Image 1 (cartoon, rainbow, N blue to C red):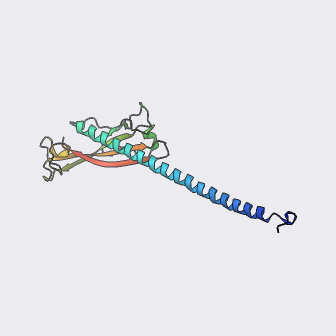
Image 2: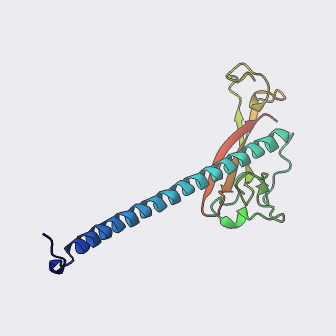
Image 3: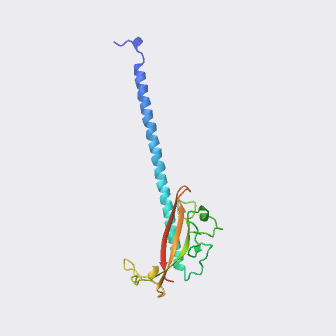
Length: 182
């Protein structure tokens, strides 16, 4: 015995409350999804920047392997004498421009708009301790500072490489040392 004249809208009120609750839950879960998307994009951007920096380090190592002396090192770059290298955190040295002589471009990397760059600083020499026979960890021979002219000194180089990700919001700077008998 339901009399339509005695209905006061209780069912409508309850369904509106449920709809409001569902809307709030939906909006909050969308905010979480958007935040997770931004975080994963930032991680990917950082990984692209790291890969670019590693590419620049490899390009610098190849440049060092081509050296037969250190006569090309000076105070203007991209090959610096000991103590004359710029501050790697100075953004002005990393400008991607063909006129930039402070750093060297390392070649394009997929997913990047700016080429990774590097500079090399002559770090000095160390004596060969005789433990390096020119044979790698897995039995391969040649390459690196194990081969060379019989010079008892290993010339060391400081490599600083920088790269951005797909956007300029992410950057990675790697500093490493490399040795070679000249």
